[in-house]
Length: 176
Image (cartoon, rainbow, N blue to C red; front, side, top):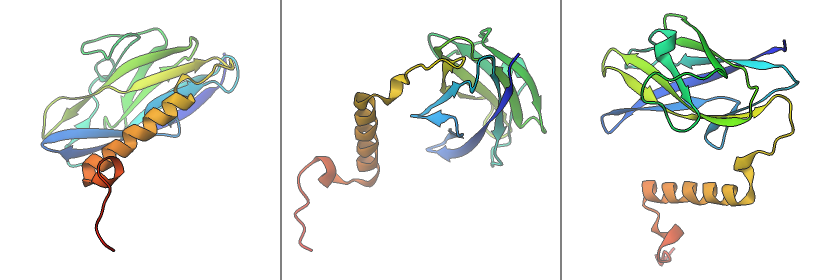
């Protein structure tokens, strides 16, 4: 049996255009996905998903309702995998602890489910990448092509949000 590596994932929520939008923050988040690589063979991770204070009264339901996982697509109903074990919901139902055994390299799709006192049931479906038990696996998301695609997507999003036509459209010919 290896070492238990603690991984805290902070869950932030805000409302955008009438919908609750979630953001995960963690030292294990890379290129928009949670990525885990064991420090040594046999190690595992206890992931603590912590709901940050918000105006929506968010809480986790029972552990088997709070975390679903699959290998092929984001689960929309109960789905479990032997690489993950929902351990407990605690801290006023604002922390969910899930064990990631991280034995097999794979990209897993998972869903976090929440109760909201203001908006009813809520659902978040990010991705976990297990790079596996101390093997020197290449990180598939950090190739030059992926980095360029991420950079272009980010620039396009900023341009759309701020109406910066000069980034991708006609040159800005205003006099300075």
